[in-house]
Image 1 (spheres, rainbow, N blue to C red):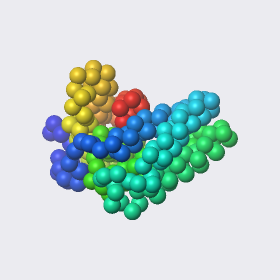
Image 2: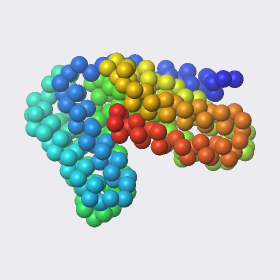
Image 3: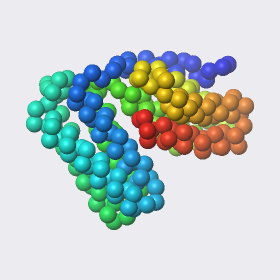
Image 4: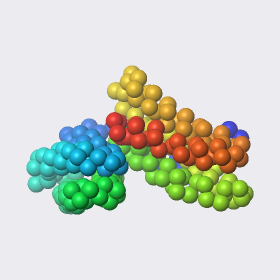
Length: 237
């Protein structure tokens, strides 16, 4: 068996949206504002209050500029979405609440609050049939977090091995989706290729450990999933 949990993988594949490219100014603006958001998310996951505050201020400024430009009159394809302007406001509120935590040097709390921005924007795009590379990153992230949270539980029992094998199968598919959904403009980007390969290699290492039913290797491989993903996310996600 070269791929794990083939049946479950196919089910997962059928539930994922078909990739498409953004061709509208509003989505492009939101993706541009998403870059400082990723930096704020990264910095609040660190230990420097100063760096976290600086990153969050930049994210807030970028988002406020977007609100001023688009909230009053949503452009296509968002002009028929009655929740468009409200979603932009909700994102701004998340930033404000996270800023309170950062000023109190409660970086983990700020980081947890900022996670909501990713979900709000993903739902906004989903409502309006817009798909960007970030959606593939979000899908991988969600499954990775499940693997990290549950992957090592009960290892040694047959049911635990089967459950982990299924998760690795889905992760394997989603890692491939990152390549398939990447913008064509990145095809010659050697840094993107290297970082994507690191993500795929981290999944391959976990898959090999599961196939070998090596508990120690599984725990080690699980511990090495987040690093490659985080590096890809901060620049491209």
